[in-house]
Amino acid sequence: MTIDFESLITNNSSKIRNIARSYTNFHDYEDLMQEILTQLWRSHSRFRGDSKVETWLYRIAINTAVSYQRTEIKQRKVKEKSIAMKSVDAASQGLSHDEILHAFISTLNEIDRAVLMMYLDGLTASEMESVLGIKANAIKVRISRLKVKFREQFVD
Image (cartoon, rainbow, N blue to C red):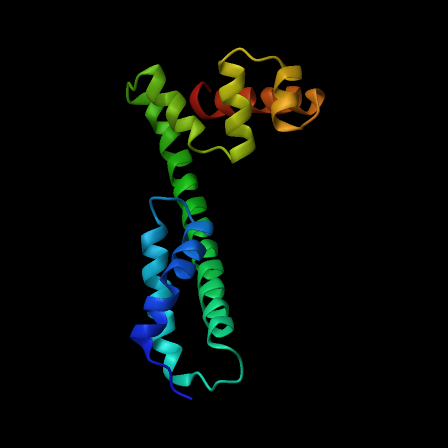
C-alpha cells in the first residue's frame, strides 16, 4: 500500500505539531518537527499497510521525538559540564557577581536551580516545601550542598 506523502502531512500536520511541542520547548519545536517530517519521508515508502496510517505516523513521530529528546539531554549535560569548567575560570577573570551567579545557576539541575532561586528570593524552607513538594529538611540539605559547591567553584 502506498501513501501520498503530501496528503499525509497535510491531513496530520496538527498531530505532528502537537507531538513536537510536547517533546521539546517552544523555541525548538520546529527543529523537532523537521526531524519528524524527515523520518516520515524516509520511511513512507516502506509503509506496508499492516496498521492504520495514523498509527504508523504516531509511531514514527513519537520514536523520533524521544530520540531527539535524548540527544538534547546529552548535549545539555555536555554543555553544562563545559560551563562548569569555565565557571571556575570566570571568578578569576573579573566577572561581576551577577555573571558569576548566572554561570553557577546554569550548571544546576532543575530542582537545585529552583531551590537556589527561591533561597535567593528569601523564601523559607517551609515555603519551598509547599511549592516543590520536597521536605523542608531535604531543602535545607540541598541549600547547604549548593553553598559548598559554589565555594568550591568560585572561592577556593
